[in-house]
Image 1 (cartoon, helix red, strand yellow):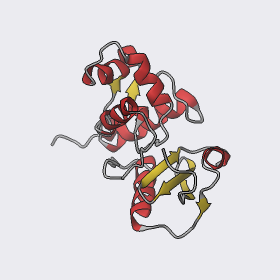
Image 2 (cartoon, one colour):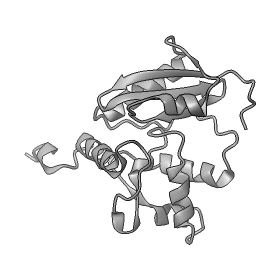
Image 3 (cartoon, helix red, strand yellow):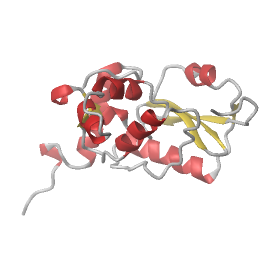
Length: 184
């Protein structure tokens, strides 16, 4: 758990999909927010976070990575340090496996559960993804329902936002037929 008197900082920034937000401590990113009509959600969750415009280099790197990913670059955000203090071990493991999914690829909740050695825990994985405080750093949009269906997405715009992000990533890695390079 992050001590209530520990300093936190926040920053909001524009992306190609809208305004995003990030909160961090001295230990890493505490929370991030996908485009939202209001950043009040971050302020409610982290009321002591001090808004800043000057970013430490590791947070500027995270912001640049999020911007690039949402703009259509096949960006891996796996090197961004998270502050997962207070997050239960099961959820941390779900986050780690989710972060290992490359841009343009997906897994199902059941596949994540099986990789954890708990094949019956697909619903628990779904709850962990739904409570993900780090989107898109922990790319929960890459985790699908049974049969690969894009089900449940707690970000603004719901499943439509999930589809949009997956389409952006598919295009970035050349998976869309019209975007592929000629063979000859």
